[in-house]
Image (cartoon, rainbow, N blue to C red):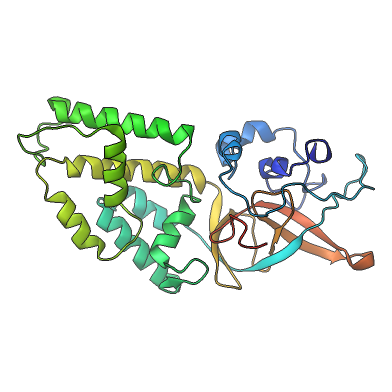
Length: 308
């Protein structure tokens, strides 16, 4: 399939194997299609068709012409990009995110405390952003509906606008008094712009910005905040299922399979939209190396050709 379609997309559909599995680590397992809904992958057909990621500039894979269908080794040309230095479980942080963090300020502050607790520097050098912003982008694999514009996210915007109109029409809970008597409704695009400008992943003085925004009596701030938090939580839950936070030797952060280990290599291959995690097995002849395929990864600051 790789040679016929000239694409490495199929590798993003492969679930990491256990050490006892005798099949090639890069091969598509018979039950993989049943597991995808349970374990999740970075790439889905809709996202790929819209070009969500492009980790390498060259989109045609370089496959060894001698590769034979019966050969258990997949021979690809690629290059080493970085190495996993630390693996951080997200379990307790996500529990806080889903259960205890009730406001947007809570979420930003929770991210800041988490980064401090796991010794991530306040500034993320790879993209020149604050680490809290980089962490939220990483947890959503840069695919939050307010940041990406494609068909699936347009549906989210429409649903958000319908809920907003119903809320303003009086069918919302009566105890929400965050808006006044004037009820000039925002259009869908205006609403999306308001939410995007208000509930940012970072920016200067977020507490003051949010306080200023919530002061407008004609905007149902509390309602929109809870709707936005709900969509953020849903996105993170779907993207980081069966994955851990990884930190590389070069200080990059990302999301990788739970099977990742410290020392695993992050590699880029022509024809791939995402980086892949490989584990070195043994040296081979002619300068080649043998690896076990672990899975795809999101590496913040390396998803749009920054790595080469």
